[in-house]
Length: 244
Image 1 (tube, helix red, strand yellow):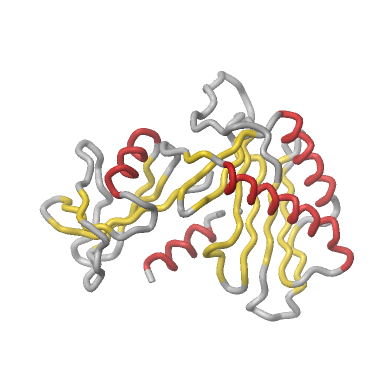
Image 2 (image 1 turned 135 degrees about the vertical axis):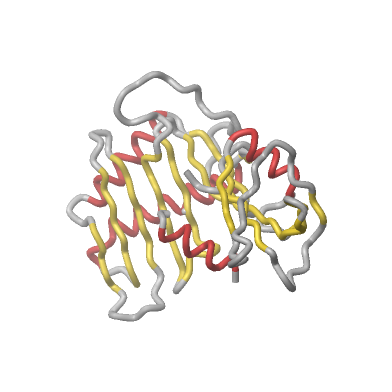
């Protein structure tokens, strides 16, 4: 239940063939610049089944050519060349021209799949399309764009390298009745999410960089429930990677 609620929250907040080169886990150096940053996301893709996006395809691509998706709950990345990224962005903008917004093909049904594509053009203009339900003939270019991004998602999952310093969201909760996989130690020097003792509701916090790496090491595999001692209380902890 906790995992389903978190997946819904992440969705609402925006929140997805051939190998060219070996991916790197290092992020690009920060360069002094104005306007859009090279590590800003310029492409987002989400394909969901009926009613839910759990297990759905998703990816993000940053302006410096870092294409990321999820594999077994962990974030993995491949680098795109400047040529490939430019061609991908231009192709998506062309496919979405004049067809932005929501294309509702659901016929009023609430259990239909949907696809969301967001791309920032070279001119900085943001284009977004949401296709609900089975596409019509006139949606051919949007469908082709989605298939191209699905193929890229598959490539990332097949060949991408894990980025252990990428952001993760850690959730703590009391977990009465939950049987943890194992006992873990919360890393020293890292502040844990604070639970409200009155409500007992789960508490989540996002960690980045070396803190994210240390928590991955301590807590183990993504989405596993492990018992940790925090502030004298034994709580249940789990984590999941965060797409940029």
